[in-house]
Figure: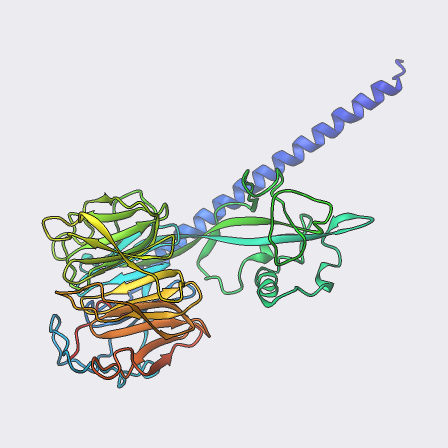
Length: 472
């Protein structure tokens, strides 16, 4: 009989623990692999189910398009100006859409799940959450699978306590110092969990039914603004945050993210290309297509033809010294863009023979110095929204003699986004995410309009009127 020493026993126990741990890890990996196989199978089944659904088509050129906060495409082609033919000019003296009631319109859903829409008189494009473009193609007679990747994010907060160090224990007993911080904490329930609690509860309650997780939860780690564990430190909840821990930084947070896939189907065809797009803009007359990439570059779609090739062939780069965040193509070969500095720029020298243009002209900032974030233009109007939700209209725009106008005029506040086209102005309001059509617009007396015709309360992410027929 061999008597084992204490060291031998310790080594044997360590080896046994390692064996048990490896078996548990292998079992966990097998469970994850099985779960992912089940999710892929469910995804294929949902894709087949969605593809078999018969969804209504869009009357491009005679409809109002709305993208909901859930990513659904809503269409209203109730047209009280049905006698107006596509391509007719707008009367210079009166442009009044006060009789168009948003609340009385009939809305229907069209298959697809996207983050941005842009239409023209005969073409409709859309972008998914990961920046992949699609073109509406009902003539194909097919309902294709659309995979939209979204990222769910949440912050984990902890505060420092003398005996236990950084902990989330008792965190919710302290009221956030301002409404913005309170909304951030409540939106993701970010302050109520730690590493030991399941993070699946963080997915938004309004998420679509046809979705599956694609990745696991992961901490965002950046050498620029987080430490090696992803933490950011601050004195109070409203910040500012930095990656450096100091004696008086009693609060820390880190960002968790997880990718999920939303599954849908509709008569959409993927546009070839590998560039992730942030925004796309089609001229109202369907003559040209431009886009802003996530890296701030401005792109032109070469080979684009509304009749024969609405998806185009390739992207061509338009040089710009300032990274861009928004662009809008107007009729008559006009192109406007918003830079990261908040200024509005106009592209000069555009034509059918030279769709890339030759140089940039600075349109400028509003008189109060507000930084613009979004622009929308057609052949006669130029509107923009700034970072605080103020809506501006460009005065004295003359398509032939002075297309950039003279100065910015403040219209109203509380606007999230704006779309201009065919004598109409459509916006999504910050309060309630309502859809709003501008009413009382007269080119002589009140070119900015007199009020909003509201509807679809709490549903809208963005809207597009650029493809609607011109009104007399």
